Length: 251
Image 1 (cartoon, helix red, strand yellow):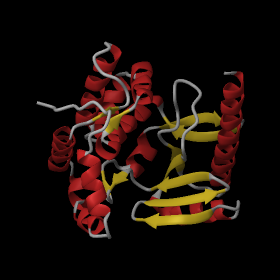
Image 2 (cartoon, helix red, strand yellow):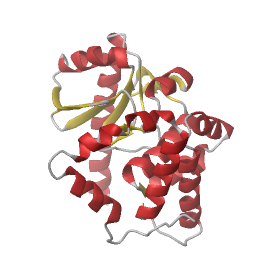
Image 3 (cartoon, helix red, strand yellow):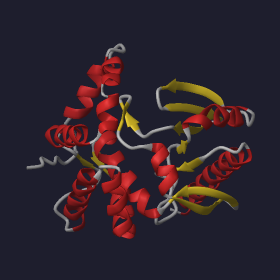
Image 4 (tube, helix red, strand yellow):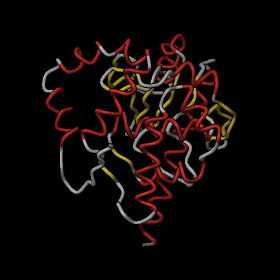
């Protein structure tokens, strides 16, 4: 156990050191940015660093990181992925899934940021309330699953601000679904990670598209995305796969 703890502490120092360098580079380049899905109520090492950037600042953000030794691995609508020695940074202009936008990145950067410290470096990040709303939208619309970390974020930081952000960005359906699953997990009726059933995911996506012009306007992008090789088959498999995950069917 001691050896595992030391390895995790080393990974945490490595992750935070890289994150501090990234936000420092973006701040120095005058980029409007905010890490998202980043703030947690406990120390946590993610698989990558997700950063929202203003659309007009995206080219400058990429150049700032390339100057630090990062290379562009993938460039897609709304996302550029860069990597350096195993550390991955995803720059988002808008949170999206299959090239369909489900939250307004510029809107989040306008309404819901504050100063914080990242590895000893002054940085701009999403507020805690915005992080809960973003975590819910990401879990339901993109990952189709609820992690224990999503519940810990919601349980720790649920507030009036959360509901305000959710309503403003029309993700209250995702927030309600997240809280429902987390209630089942908290009461011992389900285990995390919890796989959302295909009906729940499709219903949530349909409700989002009907009520929100942002995903409705970018929905044609999904057909281009699904037309790429075997991407469509992989997405369908992701929606319908079984395994050990629980399933949620929303009424």
